[in-house]
Length: 228
Ligand code: CA
Image (cartoon, rainbow, N blue to C red; front, side, top):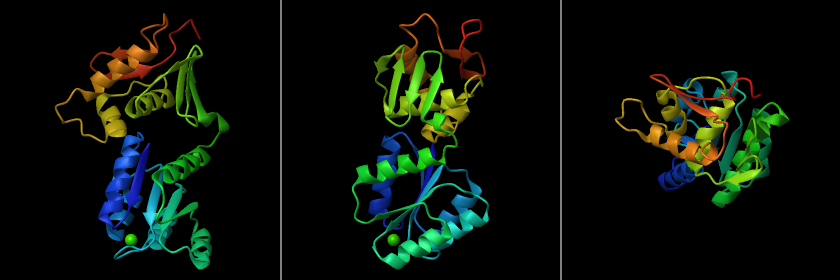
């Protein structure tokens, strides 16, 4: 999942980007309102975290731009001013939530996850499944055949992507951009290594293999025919 952070204080911005990346999100950071508005309306994100006070274009104007462009992506505001008029203004403009600075990162992460859940249309969006494999997005937990599987944040993000697009062959380039925010050109086998590790955890001990390599194309997660 991809998140846009617009924050002009570089320390806070870097802290947010690092924390959210470690939590398994792909994060773009913009340091001013112009870049923020441009990214928000030209790229696709699952959620935006907007500082209110920004040079050039402020957080409210970015939100207006996002809504004018027809996007209903969840927006979380960061405000240093815990003032009632800010909240009223934000709600009128279509903000989804607020966090008053300074805040604990764990609090931000909890709000982000709540907003992302609210954004996903159906309740079933909380748990992704394939055969006896389950990924609980709410509790950040994976199980297969009821047995708990420990995943790193990146493995979790990779499995979430594969499950969301079950049955679809996903090219390495797509996986690299969605999970690592990397270009395909980069001469790395990070995707292969991660897929191998993920398989070792979710497939190796089970007769039914869910993740397959499609030669020269990429990877697919699906339930083998005749077993569903
Ligand atoms: Ca600011």
